[in-house]
Length: 91
Image (cartoon, rainbow, N blue to C red; front, side, top):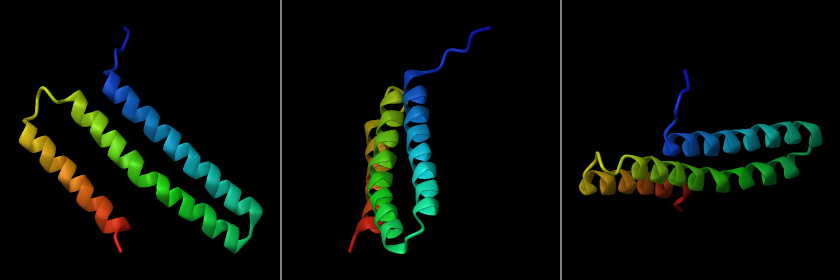
């Protein structure tokens, strides 16, 4: 009858819900303010939040399945996430 959720799954989902709610809130705020300069600042601020959320949810997921995956595969996944962040944020 009761559904027991893994702590890692719950943490990942809650983190994504908070991040998504923040994005929706800022989108509504941009519509309300209706000023391109302020909208650009708010949008840029959100761009700073995305990569840490991606990294944190990935780390939570990997620690949740650390006993099922080899260390080499975990390092490959973390390296891939690092490449994504570097590719998006790199100059």
